[in-house]
Amino acid sequence: MQHRFTKAPVFAVLIAMGLLTSAAVQAGMYRYTDENGRLVISNTIPQAATKRGYEIISDSGRVIETIAPAPTAEELAARAAAEERRKQQAAQMEQDRLLLKRFSHPDQAVRAMHRKIQELEGLIALKRGNISVLTSQLDNEQHRAAEMERAGRSIPEATLKKIYRLEGQVLDIEREIAAQRQEIDAVAKRFISDIERLEDITGSERTLPLDDSDASHSQ
Image 1: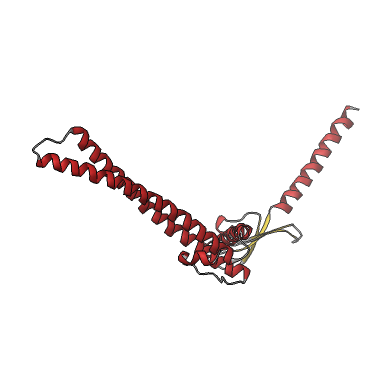
Image 2: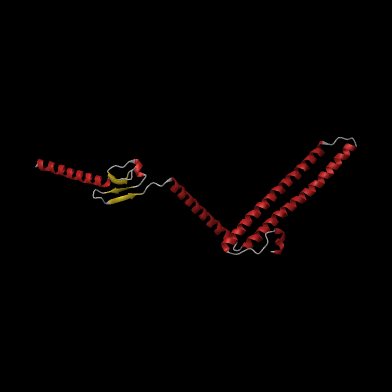
């Protein structure tokens, strides 16, 4: 009885080992081309050969899996360039979609540009009015200071401080105006780019002038 119990497990183990060995052979055979261009079949494969691509085959010669060659530097660069173009095209499509939500015709963008520029020009006009007021005050203070000097009197510290303060305020506003002039140029460039893009994607040309001096005739 004991002899029969010990024989069966040994036999099962041997069968299992045989199956595992067969499976290992089937999964471990490689067919590849060596550095001399010769076809090689082996249960191992050199690292250099994997870059050229290879096949995993069964012991009967059936191809189990085909591994493609590693991409060359040129192929990788081409893939990267293609991916970058795809991203740029996707970004452009999204920009076009948003642009068309704002304007359906180039003339709409032209009118919007005129309105924005007129708004900024209005702010500049207000600032120039402020400069005019400050300059008038500055002239008065400087005139008073000059009269004191001619009369041989010393100019009060408060007067000097007021003159310096007024001069600083005028300079600050002039810098603000210069910055807004730059903003007007930037706004015009952005709108003109949008207008040209709208002409491309809608197939319609603008009929209104880009010069905002004629904006009143296009409203």
